[in-house]
Length: 591
Image (cartoon, rainbow, N blue to C red; front, side, top):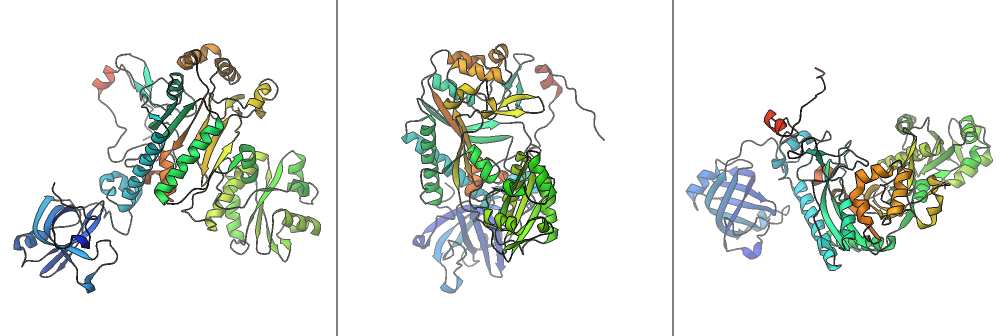
């Protein structure tokens, strides 16, 4: 070994020992006869002192060092003088008095200082990711990620689960996002698909009698990207046989408690809270509510129907809704200009306007307050729990527009008003999602989650009478406003499976072509089974109170699904295309 200790391993207890440390030059200081270098590795920093009286050769070489040079320093570990102790670093009481220095690799001037105060723009960091990976914050994220994976494996091992790998090269069964396709050289014109999830394979494992499966699985989806989404990502994939929904929820409650204990050292109160999908949308506007703060949505349709404000009354007459929320104590924090900005913001979610009232001396203060009687003003204040200094916002529109606009406004206000601690983790279950949702563009029904969710037992009779009211035995785990896991009880009866396919327009012949291997497996003694998948990247992001998933992945893609470091995706040569029997038909350049 080139080193006897890591930089973070050395303490005052090692004083008096001859040690060897390796790492990167983090900083250097020339004090004339003495040279000081802070040496850094992923474990910490240690100060190296070069004194010509102790080693003239080492001192001379140290004078040529610059940031990010890779070195090995050998010498005696000594205690610093009391007045020279550096309390800012863990090794601030000690230093290595170097007698030998080896330059392991000379670095070019780095594009940025990985431990500098100014973090460069993301494009530059992604281009030089190998330098960026030296940043303590990024290393902390990857260490936390490792700990979560280890805690997951330890937890499931105690419960007799098996970690089983499933194929990367599979069959294209388009549902939801686009597949990433891989052409086959030995089967010209045919393609594999990279897995959007191991969904079908893990169900087949249940049919195969492997009743407790998990996998830390790589998944791929060709979809539009956001700050919390990547084209390739990792999920903690779980499936169990001979269970019902309650078994899955209880098992994952335990996993989350294990994670929180490992990372935060605190106890997570169990069981986790639960909301139905209908209740979540009604109270918070969406199915992934951030519960770190209140500000629930309130319907004032009864008051709106009788007031003198035409926008409200016409909305109610047209079958719409008038809903609002209370930004506590925000009346003086938002000017009219700020409110105009919020009006534009909710317009992005379909809202045609944003009504507002300041609560002042027990009444409503607003340009439209004159359209509301004193009685109605008091009723609105009472419904929203208003007090002097509060700011009330309302959207009048179709139900789904009021939900989308107010949910987004609620999230924005919560962040701007600093209503929660970013480090808090608030986790809950959202249950009983709709089995189907309406695809208006194609005028048909589609599966809300995926077509393998078992309908709620109480709703099986609604297939032919009221399919829109049918609930699925599906569930999402929500944390801090993010969908952090999703799963369902699976269909194990091939007749029920085909009925679901029929309803969403997948005829029996097409179903056999796309999912025949699964349907056939269900005919050979499939047990009742259920499962879930947790987004590992998102959990790391949330534990770190980060809002960019690229900061918790070692080698992420950009928002255009590119790798700036390796410049992937890239063109391939004609011979490779010939071997794959592929000819390109590229769009014309816009240049």
